Image 1 (cartoon, rainbow, N blue to C red):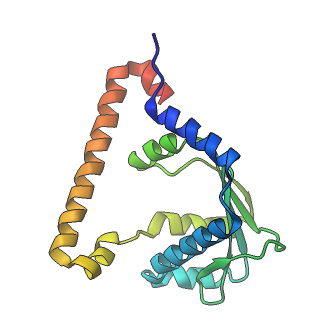
Image 2 (cartoon, rainbow, N blue to C red):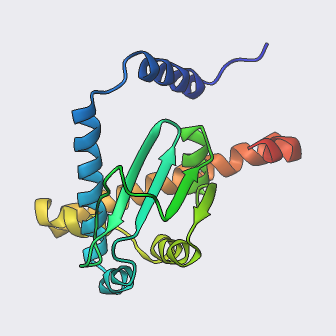
Image 3 (cartoon, one colour):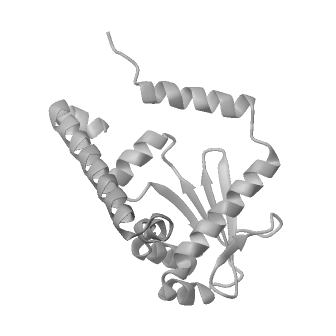
Length: 184
């Protein structure tokens, strides 16, 4: 008898709750503003990123995953801001993996998420460069709060956890054989 994955069960529960009880507009707006703040924080850590984005000022990128979406506009400073809904998107990115678990597995393997890309090729190339070259130095930010040694230890534990999850995923794939690897 086949058993259903608890992750799939949780995903189905979360999806049904989201359709029955959508979050209020103010919460969605506030969450999007926090995402913009985080993205700008990461952009400010790499001057090449902001200088590349300055060339794209005023351009709008729309990112969609399932029911979630965010529209970002490049500012004259090479940072991001929420775009006005009336502005047409110059680039649309749609994450095609419906399952958050499949996306997490993909990212654990070091792969980029599957995307459908429509729009300006030059802007898409800049976004791809950002995805390839920007990394959030979470350990550095954490060290400002808890000190260097504690931040390093927390980072070490996190790296070991990711390595263990990758090992678990690889061993599960190898136990499943060729048919299981193709399905994963």
